Amino acid sequence: MTTAQPSLLVIRHEECSSLGLLKTAVKDRSIPIRYLDTPKGEVLSEAIANYSHIVVLGGVISAYEDETYPFLQYEFELLESAIAQKIPILGICLGSQILAKVLGAKVYRGESGREAGWCEIQLLETAKTDPLFKDFPPQFRVFQSHQDTFDIPPNCDRLAQSSKYPNQAFRYQDHVWAIQFHLEIDENVLSDCSTVIAQELVDSQIQDTTIEQMLREAEQYSPAVKPLADSLMEHFLAI
Image 1: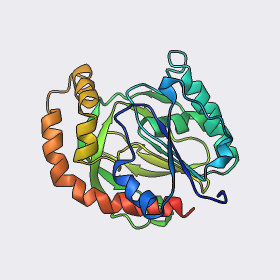
Image 2: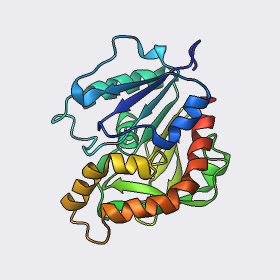
Image 3: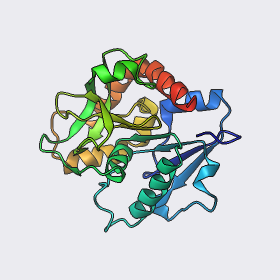
Image 4: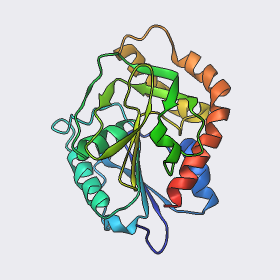
């Protein structure tokens, strides 16, 4: 589904978050961006159909904590409506877990601990013909920071895996994508969110990496992520 005038809704859970590397393709198309900060109580006054595309960003909370964070229930209902209306949606990290829950899958704390830092992702055979991932290499390194994971929802195609968590991406029909990893993050976005991520490392008792090491590695790895982010977002906005 596309509106007469393309426009992008970005649901944000942390003030430090942004589209980061994904923004280039949006700017190249001169598509207006609306950030919706649901934790602050922001809701849409207009219909969801006013937006041609939706991106749901990450955050430190869990998709199953909707009783603690009532704004999640609002997001569930909003995304259910968008899915029914065939609006293209991309969920990242927490956003992917929210989509998994909305589509009927279990979201839960993973048993393998926090996946943190610049991690290797392997694409599956299904990704070779996927509209968003078809131009990706079979393996690539990208930033991760999560401990929750999800089952693949019914009627979805699993697209990617890592050595730590097998469910890293899926597609529902031809308009909904969920990715556990962060194609939007480079050293600038990581620096913006460094306080949040550093606290996640402390909370998870991670001792084999630090935010300082992650920032150094970002300068090494993010240049290779940028063309992947550009490719994915260009294909996503073309839907």
